[in-house]
Image 1 (cartoon, rainbow, N blue to C red):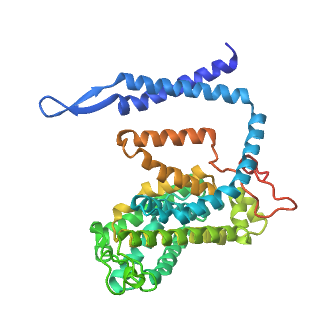
Image 2: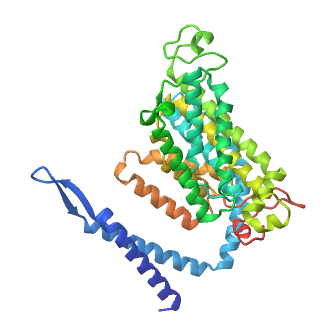
Length: 428
């Protein structure tokens, strides 16, 4: 037995032992109704054995495959794949945009609702991508800005009678203000410490929403949030004067309102993408990327780190506030339970899975995670297991995301695709 095989076997055996400790109680024990009406524990050793054996075999084959491929060959393959993805992105992006524009023509409410949900997470992912992907600031409390935007629109609309289009910029600006408020205490923090503080900030916002009953109605939430209008035309299921159906002389349908909401969130997402791409080419965007690579080098070059961090937090929070305002008007009801940590985790997973700094990668990851998750809705018991396994496989095969390469913001001569490995080693 060669040294490589022995080392791989030891590593795979250790992974199998860890899997046994995790899967033993999670998969091996199942509660079932007993003969007397109580619950009894049923052991499933075969399921645990299959799971542990799968982990052992998968880890062993992965290590042997990596050893055979070699580091230089892996780098060359990743570089070639990054260039291929860059070429393919010129066609995938327009194809996805065309499909998004034509989706309401299907007339199916299920696909429209799913499209609204996917586009909401695409917009949230693009907003967080500014903070995490471009500026390199690990933010685990992004849901706080989402909540600020939602509650800002809900309070202003129900209290003062303001419309959606009037409250939308107000909600975004208030969320950006809270982004600056968060940015000041964490100017000197990086890495894990920054993640802990932002996580705490998200929980603080949620607890405030629960306990400030006079403003937010506490855990009962806010209901009766008005829907957006199209130049004053309402979308009522029954039609009537002043409605969209009455003005255009069509049969009233709830699908009209859902299609309108879909195009609203699509427009907001495209606005987020356009602003992000424009900012990346500006000095501010290049400062974000430089700070992500090496903050000390940025300081030595005279870049104002304080202003750079604050603008990253504020810009990302701005688009989170826009998404929150749309969420409130789409649901017509919000409560603190809609803004838990799991929302921040999902958005962060979308950004990491798609590739830090990649707009196309974030859109593809949101489509896979949110849209693809619907495929396993009928398998409720194994849905999260399949979801976690898919994430593990992608992170093993593409550890830097689905689209890890990127085109440089500024280049001398040909704009060649930069592999993520080069960026990580400081050569980008």
